[in-house]
Structure formats: C-alpha cells, structure tokens
Amino acid sequence: MRLPALILIAVFPLCGCDIFIEDPGGEGMPCDGPEDCQKGFMCDQHICSKVPDESEFGTKCQPAVQGSCKGQFGECLCFPDNNCYCTRPCAGAHGCDDIQITGSSVRCTLLDPLGLQGVCANWQWTNSYGNLCNPGDIECDNGQCVGFPVPGLHVCSTPCPPNCPEGYACDIGAGPEEPFCGFAHWFGFWHACVDSSDCEVMYPAYPICKNGENCTHPCAVQGDCPPGAYCDNTPAGECVPDM
Image (cartoon, rainbow, N blue to C red; front, side, top):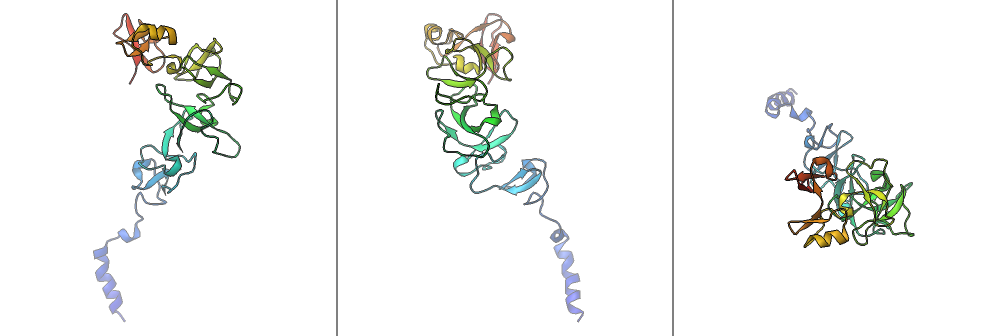
C-alpha cells in the first residue's frame, strides 16, 4: 500500500511546484496594463480577459493589444474622454443611424485634426464636438450645426469665445460667419493648393500656399499658429503641422 506514495514522492521533484501556480497573464489573472496579459487577452479593469470574437460597439479596448476589437466594430480608437473604444468608420451625418444604444445617441464624428474621415462615437465620448450634421436635419447636442470653409462640411460646434476645448481653434465659420470652435483643418489649414489664389478664395484664414502644396498662414512666434502646428523658419515663417 506504500507504493503509490513512494511514486508520488519520486515524481514530485520532477514536476516542481508550478502545478500549484496559476498561469501569469492568463484569464482571470491581475494586471496593470496590456503588457501584463498573454496574447489574446486584454487588461480589463485590472483583470486579464479574453478578447471577444465579435466586439460590441463601445467596448473599452487597448490600442497596444493587436486585435482587441474584432468584427464590425474592429477599430480601437481613443477619444477626448481619455478612454478607447471599439468602433467603425462612417461617412456622412447618418452613417451611424443603425447603431442603437440605450440612453444615448451615436453620431458620425471627426477626430483627426488633419483628416475628414468620420468614426461612430457616443456623443458622451466627445461632448458632441466634431459630430457631422445636416442643417435642419440633425440637431447638435452642444451648440449648432456650423458650416466651415471646407466645401460641404457641416459640424456641430459652439461659438467662441469663451475658450474652445484643447486642440480646437477659434476662427470664423462659413455659415454663419461668426467665430466657432473647430480643428484648424476645418477652416482650411493644410488643404491642398497650387498657388496662393486657391487659398485666398477658399480659405481666407490660411491664404498662403506653402511650397505650392498646402494652405497656411504666416507666423512670427509659436503662438501665431493653431493647435497642433508650429511656426517654421521663424521669424517670417509659416505654420506647419506638428507631425
């Protein structure tokens, strides 16, 4: 009757003690960030969890974890509320109408200060800034539907002053012609051009065609440039994107 016990004693040193230790970075293990979890797992509320096969819209995610968003909402993007969510691209003010969530609304929103590609976003993630709109068609939660100098661009914004949110410039909108908050790109900064006459007509706030490529305006110091840009070749320089 002693043989099984003797076999166990003999085998135990060969196995070591790892059989009693949970797999670090595995499902259910504690974590402080994505680097603490194994591949295929994400750090969700300090616990390593499996990345779902099909992500729901608005699922919190981590861009550092490849594939943390899957399926229709396969893009992990970070928003002004300092969180990152699974979402998808959209085009036009009605590009997210098929997404229904309780107690809120989902809108096609512009996030990139140098781009016009929209993404579906809960209005609470952005405080409604950047929501695409159609005058008289879709209401704006935080202000009014403003026409910007970029042709056909209507975006939800608020008058200024007072100050705009971080990253936004205060400049003259196209309709109405009053100061509104927006990315400098919406007012014409760094749009394509051939010569300065293109910029002067289309984007009066940025009347110089720098190097025959992009609309900008002159600057003497850093403060002369919009958020996300710096003064190149000072003094007597031009604003260029800080990329």
